[in-house]
Length: 137
Length: 137
DNA sequence: TTCACTGTGTTTAGAGTATATATACACCAT
DNA sequence: ATGGTGTATATATACTCTAAACACAGTGAA
Figure: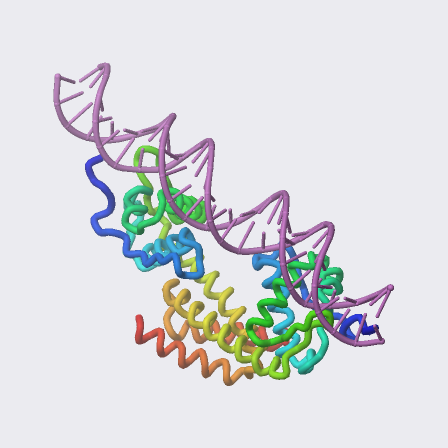
């Protein structure tokens, strides 16, 4: 065990100023990396300590994030060894994100309707925002 | 002051089991009522105690919700008198909901893209969910 | 007109839960 | 045996919620 983590560092934006708790931001970031295929099945994730150092948070904050990712089936942990991406990490990550996207959409549509928007106006807003997302992609 | 509140009770669904804190659920519910025009400008809202009794929560939980609604400009409070809908409550409520709908949409689209969905698939999902919302409306 | 009562908002104190940090212990490979 | 790993425990702070007491404003009766 001379390897100190994955070949590249995990690029996860984490900010105490953001609304979500730190551990949630880490969860979201790792999900994104897995979903995008940047973390391969069975790939070794950084240790608690390594990631905590990199992100300037405490070890337990990272542990909390890893715990939940394990609970959701995206990663698995082995004491003394390290933490790894599940073989079906990509599929699972995308499944969870799909579910989340739908949940957010339902809420967005409901909120828009409550704001007095009609069907056409909502579709138009979606279309505009979609173009923006595509550019950013 | 013989009137004990508005002519009709506030129908706000509030559940401790829901994810959002109780005060947030109350905020959302009152916003919805104002936005839908069911609470007129300068209308008297139920007192802390009356709404707390009705919703089976504590007085302070209602106070917390009313405080934030006042901060956001939807209602105003007068000690010894009661709490009222702001003259521009409807406009303000819709403005805030519009902003929230957009925020949720942006996040939903981003999450969908991260789940591997393309533009067409996203639009299709929006269309389907839109039809469902309309039925429920 | 004054005062007491009622209903209102407002303040204070306390308990439980959630989030985050620091430190020490147990496991595994080399 | 050592180094790197996950795991457990203790602590502090912030958030959420409840209960009780205090101050304000209007109304009705004397």
